Image (cartoon, rainbow, N blue to C red; front, side, top):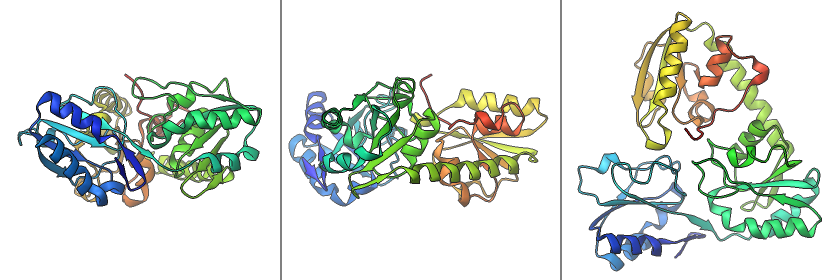
Length: 339
């Protein structure tokens, strides 16, 4: 089914629903597809006869599956649209069917435009879930120009070769020693900046939505982010009372890491408290009398939302720098990797 510029394989979800005899279904879609929810609901309802509930909760990725919230509402399964599966999320409280949304955009034009910006001959290819189906065509374009493309599988959290997440760049990191630079296919700057910081190799971003190629902008964004992070680390060094944020979203839970952070703070003579929540916000934390927060939930909380918080919010790796356990020169991006 084509909806809002995406091919959504909702037919595969219908097949599973029918086979499993599911009667009550919850649908979860990202913000960009909420305006097109009626065709999805009508199709599934017509084909299965099931009762459909639509989740209005924000949906940031496959780590953010609405699930245990519905366990007392007799929901048989969740159809999560727009992202590929992450290990250990599919069958948490309620079985989850992941249905990717493939962009219908032709990426060939912007890839051709990016060719002059590429460095060297060996090019690592990475993208997001929406453009995974284009990688074979991109490889052929690069080969036509005498370049050698490389595509790698990431760790167990990564569903497909060449795919990176906002919190996991292992599909790129696994190619670091083999390539001269990376070509990222997709929109936004967070993914390519994270890839650049993870691999320390040049990243050229080709955006098929705007038909623009970004290279220096990615480097500038990285430098701006590092300045921001350095400021957060400096601000946290004088903190005595820490809140350790523990996310309840299944794909973001790092409770073991939270305990390690608490032990680290205990050893440094700092006070700390473990704070759990499904979705953190400045409002939800404003009542605590704390000096600093360490996020073990989504790494992007500390990066994207930093300016919204009145108190410093840092990652566990940044805490190591603040406590003198790690040198600033060894700074790396916080990722949620396998294990």
